[in-house]
Every structure is written in structure tokens, then in C-alpha cells.
Length: 112
Length: 112
Image (cartoon, rainbow over all chains, first blue to last red; front, side, top):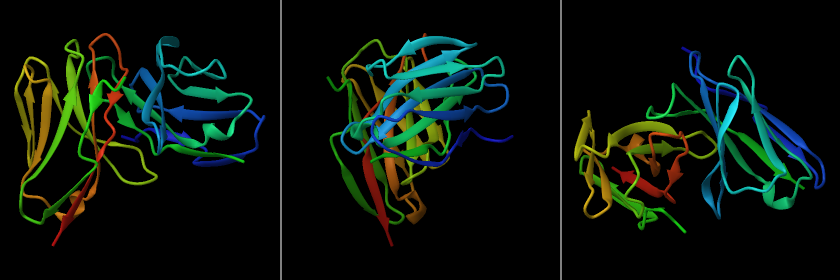
């Protein structure tokens, strides 16, 4: 069974631009969550989706948004990029709450 | 407010010996706990989990112990192997959400 896939793997943007990251969960998984990893803040929860509904949101500004499609694939968008948005963005999927989450390889975003 | 803490940023262990990684939490409402292993520029890999109603869970060389009264869990790796060298994260969650609260990680180095 294929794992969680994320595209693109690497991205370089400049301040003020916007970016969209994509995540395809493991087949059969309906829950998708997003995390941001930075050296200073560690792994921080961004949002969680289940059956196209945002179920939970982390403490990030409104520039960070996401959505989930009917096939469980998910996208996250960051608008008006700032230097501090440079990070590894990780997507995880699971069968549902109470089950272990499996992570994708991440998208490395660099904002110049 | 760091709800999940890993107070040891690094640990060095000789091959064949036991590695013990520790994690403390502050929220007594967490329902289950997980350990992940992570290499640079990759997504975390799930290792083992434990429900808050148990005090021990074992899977091969990995055993997780939970002490609810002390709000403390530990991961034991026996015997340690050089391939275990990575950053280990503990995480906590509640059953009504997939939101994982991560610790800051412990870098384990296993030397020959």
C-alpha cells in the first residue's frame, strides 16, 4: 500500500507570494492533518480534516488555510508569505481519531 | 505553554545497550501517546503507541512505559543498534481529535 505522498518536495518563494501544498493520504484514510516543523518551534499542529470538514485548527494566522476533497486528498495554502514561514510542512493521515498517524516526506518551503 | 516536554535534547548510547528516552506531559486529559522516529528532511515514522489505560506496551525491541500519576512516559530500545540513531519525538493526543501535541525531540546516537 502506498504511503502518504506530498507535492512538491521542495519550493522556493519570495515574500508576499502565496503557495499551495498538496497531500495524498494512504488509501482508505479519511483523516488528514498538517504540521509545520521549524528549528525554533519544533512540530506544530496546523489543521485537521475529516470527510472534507476542518475538525481542528492550530494557533496559526489566517494566512494559513486548507481544504480536503471528496477523495480525501488535501491542500494547504499560505498567502502573503513571510520569511518566518520557511519550514518543513508535513502531512499525516489516519483511519480516524485514536489511530496512529502516518506522515508523508514533507514539503520544504523556503521563503526568500 | 509546552504541554509535552522532552528534557534531554540528546542521548548517546553504545550499540547493544539499552536506550531510554523520556517524555513528560502536563495535561491529564490526554488519551494516548505515541513515539515517532525522524531523520532529517523526512517525515516522522511511527514506532509505538500506548493508551492512557495501560502502563506498558511492547513491540519487538521497543517498549513504552506510562506512569500516569507522574505524567511521564518513556521509550526503551533494547538492544540499541546504530540504525536507531535519529531524533525521537513523543506525542500526545485525545480520542476526539487527530491533533498531536509533540515534544521537542531527543537526538539519539548509537555508537559501535
